[in-house]
Amino acid sequence: MEHLECCARLLRGTLVRAAVRRYLPWALAASMMAGSLLKELSPLPESYLSNKRNVLNVYFVKLAWAWTFCLLLPFIALTTYHLTGKAGLVLRRLSTLLVGTAIWYVFTVLFSNIEHYTGSCYQSPALERVRKEHQSKQQCHGEGGFWHGFDISGHSFLLTFCALMIVEEMAVLHEVKTDRSHRLHTPITSLVVALGFLTFIWVWMFLCTAVYFHNLSQKVFGTLFGLLSWYGTYGFWYLKSFSPGLPPQSSSLNLKQDSYKE
View (cartoon, rainbow, N blue to C red):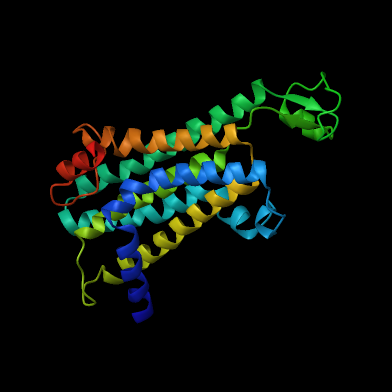
């Protein structure tokens, strides 16, 4: 338990700072641009992480929203109830996950449709000979073809959104104070550690996407949509009364408004 608490204190000191919430979006955008330029001008040699079948990609990134949803659900519920004791407010705050799920679904469908309507089926990865008889990506792959369209980076979008959402929700830890005797101490501490490590995985895999996959424009659009989804919710809508609201904390609305004006 001591090791868990030590790890939780370290993550609190790293991810809960207001400076992290303020500058992480800029850091993600800058690292995406830097990684993309590196990929175009001086590509890195292939590695385990450049293989789409690496463990982090298959078991974490491909399920990024599921991991984020399943860990944030008990975290938001426990911390909100601990601070307010109001079941209604807990349900209201949990609706942020429904909003996040809607955002994930809408953009996933949008990206898929864009790739479909801008794509064609080719004979080989070198884009030789268009197979005009194939009308969809599934048909193309089923016949051994290669579909090429404008494939907006879903990884750049979702990892940006998930990382920023977790950091925003962890801001509540400024107010959550529990000792070892408190019945919620162990579950909250465990969730802090899990969410902290998950955030680092999301940021790390975002960087890997920047240097190994997609072209610059595809990553720019993916990252931009992730940033807009985050700002549209936590930076605008959640400041309003008719919304899921921000994590409960002292003067949260004023502090949040000030941080976005700077």
